[in-house]
Length: 438
Image (cartoon, rainbow, N blue to C red; front, side, top):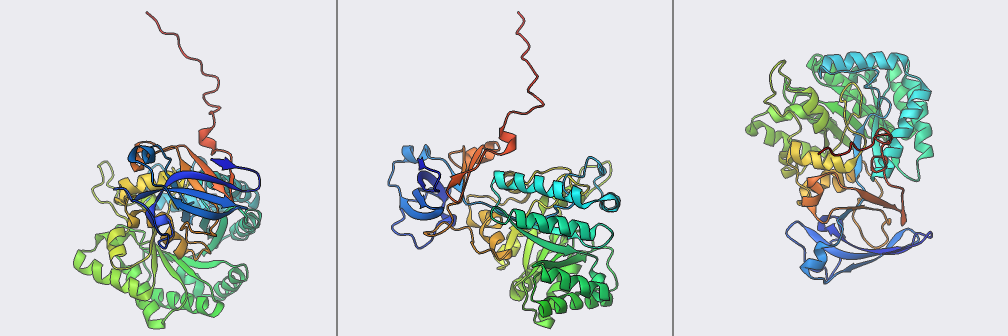
């Protein structure tokens, strides 16, 4: 491996075939896990060489596994790291909402700035290249939250692309204040969002609010990303309404349904046609299995038997673009996570059976997520692409699944410092081994 401070170097490694330019020929053998051995070269931060390696199986086994940097399609930076002060160990939606409202009532711009800085630094060093964050946009802390995150978006622009979505009750878009907010968000390059799920308003008022939101988005030329059907009852009512309204209005703006968890409760005979209508309308889905499995399907005092999350594989088979996000990070909605995309991929294989050896198992974290966020780069390694890689201390997917692997992150042809969890922990620094006793 060669590397210097000008962003020039080369590396021999294994990459998923799905993340390498399909036009690259001759390509060499692809192993049973979808990996191909390459020599990757870069100059001045851009890929200049992709050379297949004609190495033996033994030589290939010794090469490290690498990925292009993943994308986080759904986060909440404004409330991240608030679980200690506003816990929800009950794991209920009602307590999450109550704790969220309490936190919002005492939130300051300085707190959001500090939390967002911590989140973006973790994301950057652990390999993420873009994050879409929903922002609580109704209430006293809405403006301070936006101001802090807009400052962070500018501060981090060359490292992590930050997209911001206005999160409000859906009916807010029917009000004059909603129209003002939509224009304000559009002027700052944001996205319009909202919540559609139990307890639903009447079908008419939900439809009117959704129609108003889509009309605002069309007029202002902005995308829409909704929290829809984050529920373990009344399956798919929200998604069906979004699809129907989008087709009726012939909406041309990008639309994402985040969560879509209660679709999993539909029988196949109803789920498949709805998935096909989603594809027909060009609506993407962001699945959020960690938060949904934490909050939904609870049976007090008993083990849950339902896995209420978006039916990822059925949606993919119907032609829907599906991404997978971590959603909440150490807040009242979910007490875990730390913006580690590799850990999310590992957990995704467990929670959702999306296996990274398969193209459709890898796409929700990489190429499909890039497309849903309309990023300039789709995450496929090709000549002229950014020299951005996440190189793992694992030779294959088995090593990746066995334990959370150490990694080195290459951005613009330069290596970043290791992520914080790979540094010695101060909590363990003072511990000394206990001598063995005979």
